[in-house]
Amino acid sequence: MISRLTLLLSIFLSSITVAQVTERTDARIQEVAATIFQSASKLKWTSPSDFKKYENNKSKSTQELYESIDGFVREASINNVSKLDSDLKILLSNYQGNPEYTGPAFAEQKDLLHGRSVIIAYSISRGGPAINESAVTIRGYRNDKEKLVLSDTTGSEFDGYGMFTKMLPSPITGESWMIAWGPLHGFNGSKNRVRIYAFDGKNFRTIWSPADMMNVTVDVNSSGFSIKRLDEERYYRLRKCPCMIQEDYAVSIQGPQQIKIYHLDGN
Image (cartoon, rainbow, N blue to C red; front, side, top):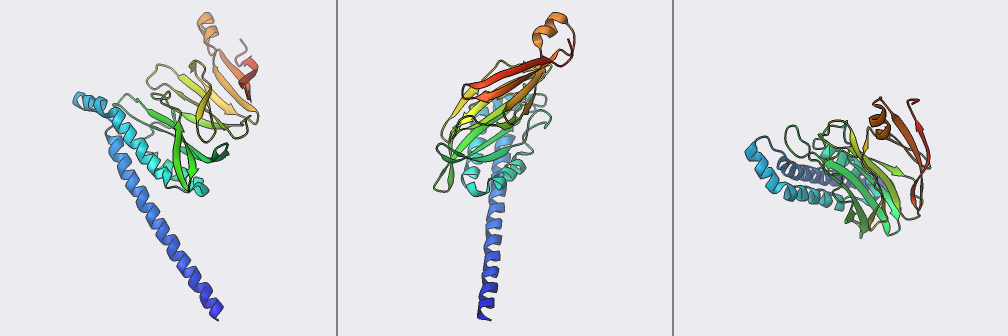
């Protein structure tokens, strides 16, 4: 009887603890959501007077937003990154722009050279009614005494672009490789930036940075990736559409190695 009462008491106390943790977590999400809303609101303009204010505060407001999200990530559990991933998707879903041109936020945990780490990526829509000067970031965090501390970012080279990301098979132990790509906002057509980044838990490095490409789609496989794109040289020489090609790459320690290229239109 005593054992049963002890068990029931234990279950009851556990349920209270879970409820308290859930309540604290929900409160923190609401707090961060309010901060993101305040910063994101400063990153939009609708009139000439708004534009001047926007330009003057764009960098500061963007950094404030990044720091708010960094603070939220810092408090997340590295043992439950799937929860962080879903929370970020919810928090940022209204600020990322058209999903046709940019992917959702994501978070992924990796065991890397410098320890257990988390990589997150997201974009924030900025600018006026017909202009998206998106702020786009890929950020790496390391586990430090059960806190996720920002280690490095890939910089701002995707600002003004959409961004989709996929993890690649890494040819180097202790590194995580990913491919990122996305279209330039406001371009008359589909001009895309493509990058491959590696992260070792401390630093990002750029593995591949080709010139921007037209009409890009990316597929990842067990050994590398494929890019379908417009063959611009043929297109402008022949003036014939669609002039699409597919390039197949394998990843290696030297970077992506092209193993096959072929035309998709028979020309």
